Length: 88
Image (cartoon, rainbow, N blue to C red):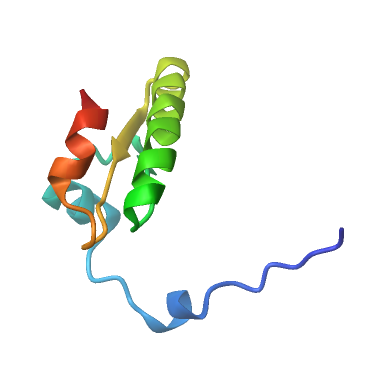
């Protein structure tokens, strides 16, 4: 299938306010490591079905690549207490 990537118009309109190093430091990440962001969704069913798969994948990646760190941002509709059982 022939395809072309045309980009994201927001990237051309929104200017970054922080450097990568400043952002990583403010969020307590190591700027020398790669960051993988796990985004399981904003609905309760998405968390229930997707988060275990994402966490299993993160574990596999972490075993293979030692320069990775992971972030799990939560949508406003997902309370932290909902994801805590999956993180144990």
